Length: 304
View 1 (cartoon, rainbow, N blue to C red):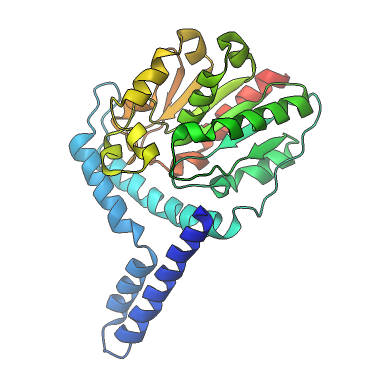
View 2: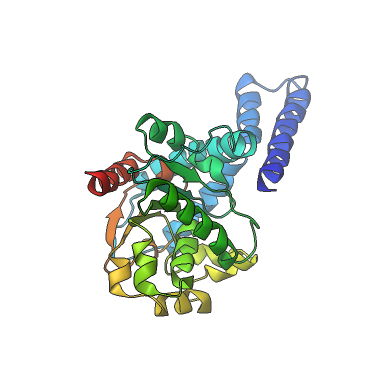
Protein backbone atom coordinates (compact mmCIF):
# COMPACT_ATOMS: atom_id res chain seq x y z
CA UNK A 1 0.00 0.00 0.00
CA UNK A 2 2.71 2.48 0.98
CA UNK A 3 4.73 1.82 -2.19
CA UNK A 4 1.65 2.64 -4.29
CA UNK A 5 1.15 5.89 -2.40
CA UNK A 6 4.79 6.84 -2.90
CA UNK A 7 4.58 5.99 -6.61
CA UNK A 8 1.65 8.42 -6.88
CA UNK A 9 3.69 11.10 -5.11
CA UNK A 10 6.61 10.44 -7.45
CA UNK A 11 4.33 10.73 -10.49
CA UNK A 12 2.98 14.03 -9.16
CA UNK A 13 6.55 15.29 -8.75
CA UNK A 14 7.45 14.39 -12.33
CA UNK A 15 4.26 15.99 -13.67
CA UNK A 16 5.00 19.16 -11.70
CA UNK A 17 8.49 19.30 -13.19
CA UNK A 18 7.15 18.83 -16.72
CA UNK A 19 4.47 21.47 -16.17
CA UNK A 20 7.12 23.90 -14.95
CA UNK A 21 9.26 23.29 -18.03
CA UNK A 22 6.26 23.68 -20.35
CA UNK A 23 5.55 27.08 -18.81
CA UNK A 24 9.03 28.38 -17.99
CA UNK A 25 10.90 27.64 -21.23
CA UNK A 26 8.59 29.62 -23.57
CA UNK A 27 8.27 32.42 -21.01
CA UNK A 28 11.79 33.63 -21.58
CA UNK A 29 13.10 33.03 -18.07
CA UNK A 30 16.85 32.76 -17.67
CA UNK A 31 18.44 29.33 -17.72
CA UNK A 32 19.28 29.73 -14.02
CA UNK A 33 15.66 30.46 -13.12
CA UNK A 34 14.41 27.52 -15.16
CA UNK A 35 16.96 25.21 -13.54
CA UNK A 36 16.11 26.47 -10.04
CA UNK A 37 12.40 25.92 -10.58
CA UNK A 38 13.03 22.46 -12.01
CA UNK A 39 15.20 21.52 -9.04
CA UNK A 40 12.52 22.69 -6.61
CA UNK A 41 9.86 20.70 -8.49
CA UNK A 42 11.96 17.53 -8.44
CA UNK A 43 13.02 17.96 -4.80
CA UNK A 44 9.83 19.11 -3.07
CA UNK A 45 11.06 17.70 0.24
CA UNK A 46 13.97 20.17 0.38
CA UNK A 47 11.95 23.13 1.80
CA UNK A 48 9.99 20.79 4.09
CA UNK A 49 13.24 19.40 5.45
CA UNK A 50 14.57 22.93 5.88
CA UNK A 51 11.55 23.73 8.07
CA UNK A 52 12.18 20.59 10.13
CA UNK A 53 15.77 21.65 10.75
CA UNK A 54 14.62 25.10 11.79
CA UNK A 55 12.26 23.49 14.31
CA UNK A 56 15.12 21.28 15.50
CA UNK A 57 17.34 24.34 16.02
CA UNK A 58 14.59 26.20 17.88
CA UNK A 59 13.05 23.42 19.95
CA UNK A 60 15.49 20.53 20.04
CA UNK A 61 18.15 21.70 22.47
CA UNK A 62 19.39 18.85 24.63
CA UNK A 63 22.03 19.25 27.37
CA UNK A 64 22.75 15.51 27.19
CA UNK A 65 24.39 15.75 23.74
CA UNK A 66 26.74 18.24 22.06
CA UNK A 67 24.86 21.11 20.47
CA UNK A 68 24.73 21.04 16.66
CA UNK A 69 26.30 24.06 15.00
CA UNK A 70 24.75 25.85 12.03
CA UNK A 71 27.33 24.10 9.83
CA UNK A 72 26.33 20.72 11.31
CA UNK A 73 22.66 21.38 10.52
CA UNK A 74 23.39 22.62 7.00
CA UNK A 75 25.50 19.54 6.28
CA UNK A 76 22.80 17.28 7.72
CA UNK A 77 20.09 19.02 5.65
CA UNK A 78 22.04 18.52 2.41
CA UNK A 79 22.62 14.85 3.23
CA UNK A 80 18.97 14.35 4.14
CA UNK A 81 17.73 15.91 0.90
CA UNK A 82 19.79 13.34 -1.03
CA UNK A 83 18.80 10.47 1.28
CA UNK A 84 15.10 11.37 1.13
CA UNK A 85 15.15 11.46 -2.67
CA UNK A 86 16.88 8.08 -2.83
CA UNK A 87 14.57 6.40 -0.32
CA UNK A 88 11.18 7.99 -1.01
CA UNK A 89 11.48 8.62 -4.77
CA UNK A 90 13.43 5.53 -5.84
CA UNK A 91 14.09 2.65 -3.47
CA UNK A 92 10.73 2.42 -1.69
CA UNK A 93 8.22 3.19 -4.47
CA UNK A 94 10.08 1.45 -7.32
CA UNK A 95 12.48 -1.13 -5.89
CA UNK A 96 11.09 -2.25 -2.53
CA UNK A 97 11.20 -5.91 -3.58
CA UNK A 98 14.11 -5.72 -6.02
CA UNK A 99 16.56 -7.24 -3.53
CA UNK A 100 15.39 -10.58 -2.10
CA UNK A 101 16.07 -11.70 1.44
CA UNK A 102 19.32 -13.59 2.01
CA UNK A 103 18.66 -17.32 2.59
CA UNK A 104 19.42 -18.68 6.04
CA UNK A 105 22.61 -20.63 6.65
CA UNK A 106 22.77 -23.01 9.63
CA UNK A 107 25.26 -21.78 12.19
CA UNK A 108 25.36 -18.16 10.96
CA UNK A 109 23.62 -15.43 12.94
CA UNK A 110 20.89 -13.84 10.86
CA UNK A 111 19.85 -10.19 10.68
CA UNK A 112 16.27 -8.96 10.86
CA UNK A 113 15.74 -5.49 9.36
CA UNK A 114 12.74 -3.54 10.66
CA UNK A 115 11.80 -0.24 8.97
CA UNK A 116 10.12 2.80 10.50
CA UNK A 117 7.31 5.26 9.88
CA UNK A 118 6.25 5.90 6.24
CA UNK A 119 8.75 3.29 5.07
CA UNK A 120 8.93 -0.24 3.69
CA UNK A 121 11.75 -2.75 3.17
CA UNK A 122 13.12 -0.58 0.35
CA UNK A 123 14.87 1.60 2.93
CA UNK A 124 17.26 -1.35 3.43
CA UNK A 125 17.89 -1.92 -0.28
CA UNK A 126 21.65 -1.10 -0.14
CA UNK A 127 22.11 -3.42 2.84
CA UNK A 128 20.87 -6.63 1.26
CA UNK A 129 23.60 -7.15 -1.39
CA UNK A 130 26.26 -6.28 1.17
CA UNK A 131 24.94 -8.85 3.63
CA UNK A 132 24.58 -11.37 0.80
CA UNK A 133 28.22 -10.85 -0.18
CA UNK A 134 29.22 -11.65 3.40
CA UNK A 135 27.01 -14.73 3.53
CA UNK A 136 24.89 -13.26 6.34
CA UNK A 137 21.26 -14.49 6.41
CA UNK A 138 18.86 -11.58 6.35
CA UNK A 139 15.14 -10.86 6.36
CA UNK A 140 13.87 -7.36 5.56
CA UNK A 141 10.24 -6.78 6.53
CA UNK A 142 7.51 -4.64 5.01
CA UNK A 143 5.06 -4.03 7.83
CA UNK A 144 1.39 -3.19 7.40
CA UNK A 145 -0.84 -1.43 8.23
CA UNK A 146 1.42 1.56 7.68
CA UNK A 147 -0.59 3.93 9.88
CA UNK A 148 -2.09 1.61 12.47
CA UNK A 149 -0.87 0.98 16.00
CA UNK A 150 2.75 0.01 16.59
CA UNK A 151 1.49 -3.10 18.39
CA UNK A 152 -0.03 -4.32 15.11
CA UNK A 153 3.47 -5.19 13.91
CA UNK A 154 4.24 -7.54 16.82
CA UNK A 155 2.97 -10.80 15.22
CA UNK A 156 4.94 -10.20 11.99
CA UNK A 157 8.16 -9.57 13.90
CA UNK A 158 7.51 -12.66 16.02
CA UNK A 159 7.16 -14.88 12.96
CA UNK A 160 10.27 -13.41 11.32
CA UNK A 161 12.40 -13.91 14.45
CA UNK A 162 11.15 -17.48 14.86
CA UNK A 163 11.84 -18.26 11.20
CA UNK A 164 15.40 -16.92 11.30
CA UNK A 165 16.17 -18.73 14.53
CA UNK A 166 14.73 -22.00 13.25
CA UNK A 167 16.70 -21.83 9.99
CA UNK A 168 20.02 -20.69 11.46
CA UNK A 169 19.88 -22.30 14.88
CA UNK A 170 20.75 -18.94 16.44
CA UNK A 171 18.83 -15.91 17.72
CA UNK A 172 19.02 -13.08 15.17
CA UNK A 173 20.48 -9.61 15.39
CA UNK A 174 17.66 -7.08 14.98
CA UNK A 175 18.45 -3.76 13.26
CA UNK A 176 15.57 -1.30 13.41
CA UNK A 177 15.17 2.23 12.09
CA UNK A 178 13.01 4.85 13.78
CA UNK A 179 9.59 3.48 14.78
CA UNK A 180 10.84 -0.03 13.98
CA UNK A 181 12.82 0.08 17.21
CA UNK A 182 9.62 0.72 19.17
CA UNK A 183 7.91 -2.14 17.35
CA UNK A 184 10.82 -4.39 18.37
CA UNK A 185 10.50 -3.31 21.99
CA UNK A 186 6.74 -3.90 21.81
CA UNK A 187 7.39 -7.41 20.47
CA UNK A 188 9.78 -8.15 23.34
CA UNK A 189 7.27 -6.79 25.85
CA UNK A 190 4.53 -8.99 24.42
CA UNK A 191 6.41 -12.21 25.17
CA UNK A 192 5.01 -14.07 28.19
CA UNK A 193 8.42 -14.70 29.76
CA UNK A 194 10.94 -11.84 29.93
CA UNK A 195 14.07 -14.00 30.16
CA UNK A 196 12.92 -16.19 27.30
CA UNK A 197 12.11 -13.10 25.24
CA UNK A 198 15.62 -11.68 25.71
CA UNK A 199 17.10 -15.02 24.68
CA UNK A 200 15.28 -14.84 21.33
CA UNK A 201 17.49 -12.00 20.07
CA UNK A 202 21.26 -11.74 19.99
CA UNK A 203 21.18 -7.94 20.17
CA UNK A 204 19.06 -5.00 18.98
CA UNK A 205 20.52 -1.99 17.16
CA UNK A 206 18.12 0.94 16.84
CA UNK A 207 18.75 3.88 14.52
CA UNK A 208 17.03 7.15 15.33
CA UNK A 209 14.30 5.43 17.38
CA UNK A 210 12.14 7.74 19.55
CA UNK A 211 12.48 5.52 22.61
CA UNK A 212 11.10 8.27 24.82
CA UNK A 213 9.06 9.98 22.12
CA UNK A 214 9.81 12.90 19.85
CA UNK A 215 8.75 16.55 19.74
CA UNK A 216 7.84 16.18 16.05
CA UNK A 217 5.16 13.55 16.75
CA UNK A 218 2.78 16.30 17.88
CA UNK A 219 2.14 17.01 14.19
CA UNK A 220 1.17 13.40 13.43
CA UNK A 221 -2.41 12.23 13.93
CA UNK A 222 -2.20 8.57 12.90
CA UNK A 223 -2.42 6.00 15.67
CA UNK A 224 1.29 5.18 15.60
CA UNK A 225 2.32 8.86 15.49
CA UNK A 226 0.27 9.55 18.63
CA UNK A 227 2.03 6.68 20.38
CA UNK A 228 5.38 8.37 19.65
CA UNK A 229 4.56 11.70 21.30
CA UNK A 230 6.74 12.82 24.17
CA UNK A 231 5.46 11.31 27.40
CA UNK A 232 2.72 9.28 25.72
CA UNK A 233 0.92 6.73 27.93
CA UNK A 234 1.89 3.99 25.46
CA UNK A 235 5.61 4.75 25.81
CA UNK A 236 5.30 4.95 29.60
CA UNK A 237 3.62 1.54 29.72
CA UNK A 238 6.28 0.07 27.43
CA UNK A 239 9.12 1.35 29.62
CA UNK A 240 7.42 0.11 32.78
CA UNK A 241 7.71 -3.48 31.54
CA UNK A 242 11.45 -3.28 30.84
CA UNK A 243 14.55 -3.79 32.98
CA UNK A 244 18.16 -2.56 32.78
CA UNK A 245 19.08 -6.09 31.77
CA UNK A 246 16.97 -5.76 28.63
CA UNK A 247 18.34 -2.33 27.78
CA UNK A 248 21.85 -3.77 27.98
CA UNK A 249 20.98 -5.80 24.87
CA UNK A 250 20.43 -2.58 22.88
CA UNK A 251 22.69 -0.26 20.92
CA UNK A 252 20.98 3.07 20.26
CA UNK A 253 22.28 5.24 17.42
CA UNK A 254 21.19 8.86 17.80
CA UNK A 255 22.29 12.30 16.69
CA UNK A 256 22.02 15.99 17.46
CA UNK A 257 21.06 16.69 13.82
CA UNK A 258 18.18 14.20 13.66
CA UNK A 259 15.37 16.29 12.17
CA UNK A 260 12.62 13.83 13.14
CA UNK A 261 13.58 12.49 16.57
CA UNK A 262 14.52 15.22 19.01
CA UNK A 263 15.59 16.12 21.61
CA UNK A 264 18.40 13.76 20.63
CA UNK A 265 18.65 11.88 23.92
CA UNK A 266 15.07 10.64 23.50
CA UNK A 267 16.59 8.17 21.01
CA UNK A 268 18.67 6.54 23.77
CA UNK A 269 17.93 4.00 26.50
CA UNK A 270 19.47 3.94 29.98
CA UNK A 271 21.95 1.10 30.24
CA UNK A 272 22.24 0.65 26.46
CA UNK A 273 25.31 1.30 24.33
CA UNK A 274 24.45 4.75 22.96
CA UNK A 275 26.29 5.93 19.84
CA UNK A 276 26.10 9.60 18.86
CA UNK A 277 26.41 10.52 15.17
CA UNK A 278 27.21 14.20 14.59
CA UNK A 279 25.77 16.14 11.63
CA UNK A 280 23.68 13.22 10.31
CA UNK A 281 19.92 13.43 9.83
CA UNK A 282 17.18 10.88 10.34
CA UNK A 283 16.97 8.90 7.09
CA UNK A 284 20.66 9.36 6.24
CA UNK A 285 21.58 7.55 9.47
CA UNK A 286 20.54 4.23 7.93
CA UNK A 287 23.48 4.28 5.50
CA UNK A 288 26.07 5.78 7.83
CA UNK A 289 29.34 3.77 8.03
CA UNK A 290 29.23 3.78 11.84
CA UNK A 291 25.92 1.91 11.80
CA UNK A 292 27.27 -0.68 9.39
CA UNK A 293 30.40 -1.05 11.56
CA UNK A 294 28.25 -1.64 14.64
CA UNK A 295 26.32 -4.37 12.82
CA UNK A 296 29.51 -6.10 11.65
CA UNK A 297 30.95 -5.90 15.16
CA UNK A 298 27.88 -7.57 16.66
CA UNK A 299 27.91 -10.28 14.00
CA UNK A 300 31.58 -10.91 14.66
CA UNK A 301 30.89 -11.27 18.38
CA UNK A 302 28.02 -13.64 17.67
CA UNK A 303 29.83 -15.90 15.20
CA UNK A 304 33.44 -15.37 16.22
